[in-house]
Amino acid sequence: MTNTLLKNAKLVLIFTLLSSGSLFAQLAVDTIAYQDFEVTPAAPVWSYTGVLADVQSGNASPISCIPNTPLGINSSQAWHVAQVSGGNPITFDNTLINPGYDSIRVNFKLAGLNLNGPTGGPDNLDYVLVEYSIDNGATFVSRLRVRGSVVSNSFWAYDATGVAAVQYLPASETTFEPTTSGLQVAEGYSFCEISFPGNISQVMIRITPRSSTSTDSWLVDNLVLTGEIFCAPSTNSITEITCDSYTSPSGAIYTSSAIFDDTIPNASGCDSIITIDLTVSSSSLSSITEITCDSYTAPSGAIYTSSAIFDDIISNSSGCDSTITIDLTVNSSSSSSITETSLDVYTAPSGATYTTSGIYEDTILNAAGCDSIITIDLTMNYTGIDELNESIYSIFPNPVKDNITIKGLSENGEIQSIHLIDLNGLEIKEINPDENTVDVSSLSTGLYFMKIVHEHGVEKIKFLKE
Image 1: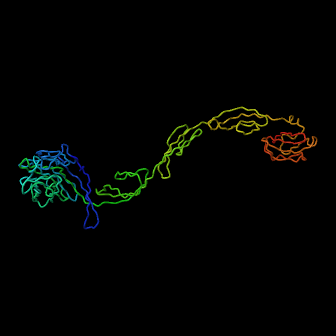
Image 2: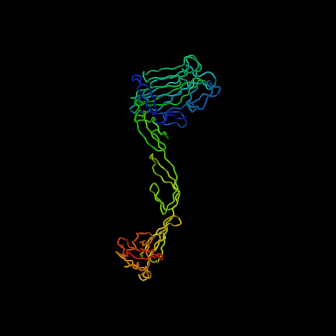
Image 3: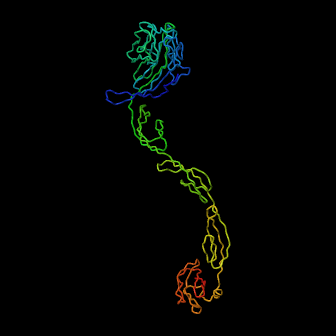
């Protein structure tokens, strides 16, 4: 049979305390011992002594008094007694009771049938007697007896609504029996129980079904011994912020923000009701394409030096994972070296100009769009003073520090204008043709030209500023 009462499982029943208005209390129920009469009984097993007269399982035949009715709870296996005139007493072992319970209960399910025909069933000569002992079997009290009808034969299934329930005292027998014959509902005593105070320390039960003929069948199933504790539910509230989903203390899963109540057992076995103010934020996904040189630093700070497609994870604005799929191409910088010799001025590949010898690094872009670093070993040569003197004009001193004098201005025709220019052809200043001495002390060190425009043409004279 399917066991719905697990070992030490806590069943919680809620009821209203009428004396306290709308106040609610709870009842925590422990399963102390259990017997379902299966081949492999469910735990916690309540063992017994004696031999069961018979067991039945499945459903009754179509010709029985209640066609196709279950012979055990949910059609499982049950203890069956028919045509046992001397009774079939079975004693269920003495079981110790832990202190702390408010009450103890013993109950079982009972059906009275005729499995061989459409009428019949137990009559007043057929009964199920329940006795108990709370002194380890030294004495037994005959407390509960269920009989067939006082009129004639009667029958009922497990779903009949009659209840045969008594307290353990007085120590005298109470009998329950239908007052009419045939099919019983309200007086079909399918639930039988004896209740005890919580302070008993042990209990032993003896059940004796008696049947006078084969048409009078008793079926007993799901005998259970329970302990009850009255307790009060507890309440609490928490605030939770999470990403994507949230598993509550009870195991329920939530994927959206809400305020809800979650229920778990508290230390007393009653409800602990937790009000949860839940905010569920979402993780995010995105993708980017990156092309870089030599190395790449991802948003998370991870460094990559080769091309790849990878996921990088950072926190989004909600504090959840932002997973970025990055399609990365890493190109390489390059380096080379050259040796150059130049006269007066050298223009590097990047366009930079140099007027003195030395070793320089020049940077341009390579074919991949990354830095191409060129090391230039540069030797500079300069135009000498003798070469400069071949001009119809001359300047001195050359090289010069402060003032330079232009010679030949008055001997070679009309001077239209004089310009001081740098190596890039940019005019620094225009000089009065009537002045042959020019102050160049403020110029930076390097090569310059004195451009003289006269009636016969244009002449440039190069000089070096020290």
